[in-house]
Image (cartoon, rainbow, N blue to C red; front, side, top):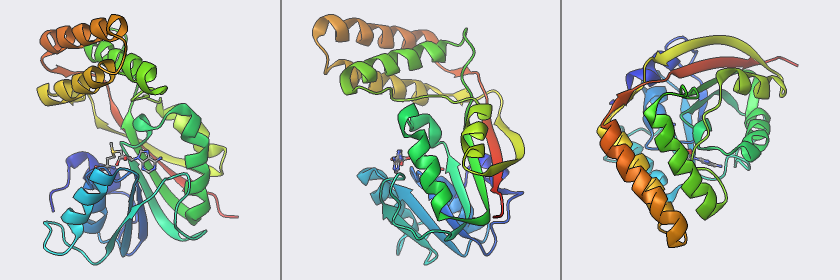
Length: 243
Ligand SMILES: C[S@@+](CC[C@H](N)C(=O)[O-])C[C@H]1O[C@@H](n2cnc3c(N)ncnc32)[C@H](O)[C@@H]1O
């Protein structure tokens, strides 16, 4: 299976073999593939995005490159999971939290805790806030400004690992370990262009006098950045305290 190194590094010290797992925020299914590869008994891959759901179904479904009868795609909201209480041994949130706005953190943490078995393992992998002098930070600022103005919420929020540890500590999770997955993070030309495109498409939904300068700034930053290696991707592992 084609599993990114960040995923294998995050999972290699977790007891995935034989476990019932939940990939919270499935994206294109990289961590679902990593969990299957590591011997999971069952993987529930959850996303609220119809395109991602289709991609993951094609990836792990019959005839797909990572075909497995151990994987199930659930198109659902992480704040209201179609899973029973105490039903999951390992939960992964790989690259999830940066797409969750602050106001949904509590609902997601509460729901992940509800479905977790006592002694469940949780792995949260995400990007630390970028340093002030990173040009990528400027591009994310333009993306967030445009999406906040157009949709009422920022596209991305980079949470410090300590903030997510404290969030989950409030739900009974105990810190286990922290690892660095990438340092620096290689933001490639295609990442830069993809984020600029999110900014432009949000800006185009705004009045010209607001959207125009945001589009121009996104274009300028694409030229100026090219590609940039900066920031950290971290992995924080926690366990649910036994009752
Ligand atoms: C960046 S992707 C995660 C990447 C993926 N974990 C991997 O390893 O390839 C974020 C995913 O979280 C999903 N997501 C964000 N908010 C969600 C919510 N409230 N409920 C369900 N899925 C959500 C998005 O639709 C997307 O599929």
